[in-house]
Structure formats: C-alpha cells, structure tokens
Image 1 (cartoon, rainbow, N blue to C red):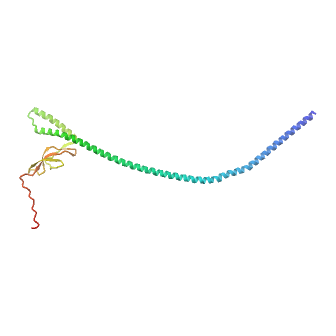
Image 2 (cartoon, one colour):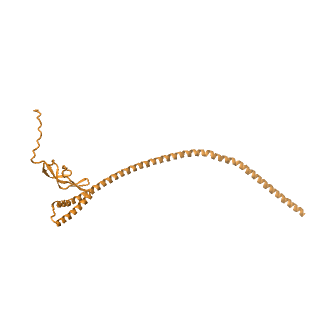
Image 3 (cartoon, rainbow, N blue to C red):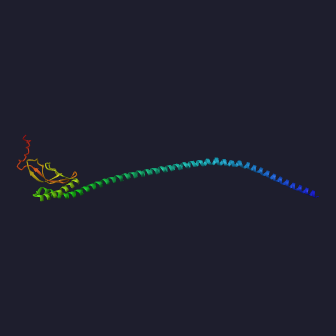
Length: 249
C-alpha cells in the first residue's frame, strides 16, 4: 500500500513537473516567436523612418541653410567693406590734419627762431651802441693828450690798455670799424656833417671821418659822420650848352 501510494505520488509529481516544463517551453517558444516577429515587423519600419529622416528632411534644411548662410556672408562682407572705407576716410583726414599741424608748427618754429635772432641782434646792438661812446672818448684822449713826462706816459699807457681791452671785446662780438676816407660818399653808410670845397678830390669824396662808424657783422651798427669834398668856390659855374633854335635852324 505504501509503495503504491509512493508510486502514485511520484507519478503525480513527475506529471506536474512535465506540465510545468511544457508550459515553460511553450511560453518561451511563443515569446521567442513573438519577439522575433515583432523585431522583424518593427525593424523595416524604423529603418524606413530613419532613411526618410536622413534623406528628405536634410534636403530641405540644407537648401534653407545654404541660402541663409550666403545672405549672412554677403551682409557681413558688405558691412566689413563699409567699415574699411570709413576707417580709410578717417585715416586720410587724420593724415591731412597731421600734415597741416606739422606745417603750421614748422612755420611757427621758423618764425619764432627768426624773431629770437632779431631780438638778440637788437639787444646786442643797443648794448654795444651804449659802449661806443666810451670808445669815442678813449680815441679822443689818445688823439689830444700828449704825455710830457714819465708820469703822464704811465697814465696814458694805463687807459690805453683799458681801451685796447674794450676794443678786443667788441671785436669778439662781431664789431668792426669803418674806414671811409677816400671812398665815395654812401648815404647807407655815411652821414655828411661837413662839406669842404676842394679841387684835389672829386665831389662827393669822403675827406675825413669825424666820428667813426661801425659794423655789427654785415649790418651797419652806427653811421660814420664824415666831411665830404665839394667843388671849389672860385670855380666857374658850368654853363649849359645852348640848344640850337629850331625856328632859326
């Protein structure tokens, strides 16, 4: 009895196991077939959709994108060209302004340099002109004073040394004396203060320099005061040549 019962139990358990195995097998097979069918059914459609997206859509987008890119490039190029032209115009204007300013500054520099030189010359002229009176007094003393003894000779040599020092200083400043004796009177250089009738020299000849004239460089610092030759008083007047009478001729 026990053996029969155990056999039935084993048979029942083996039968349940067999049914479970069959159900698992059938379920797995059906799932596998369903999955394979589903994959086969869905893959063509997915591939076709991907192909459609890759073919149709980019064609439209590429055309629009290329046109918009060309428009953007042309507008950017035009803007760059306009900016370059504007910068060139500004550069030309600044260059012209710089050249005008440089020319004005150069003219100003030359003008101020010339004014400075003229001012220096004028100051030098005024200073030296004041010193010429001292030189004149030294020259009068040398011409008039005649030393009679050793003491007077020592004094004479002393102030003549001062005179020589003053003359040397004026020479270093560019001062040089005129030597008008024997020359023809020139109003640009000489000032006639006396006239002496004579037949030994032509009229207008400078006979004597009364007050010495000086140059400062190539300019007249002081006109020389001179005595000028005049025709002799007893000379017969020059008669004008009579013109023949046309009526009597």
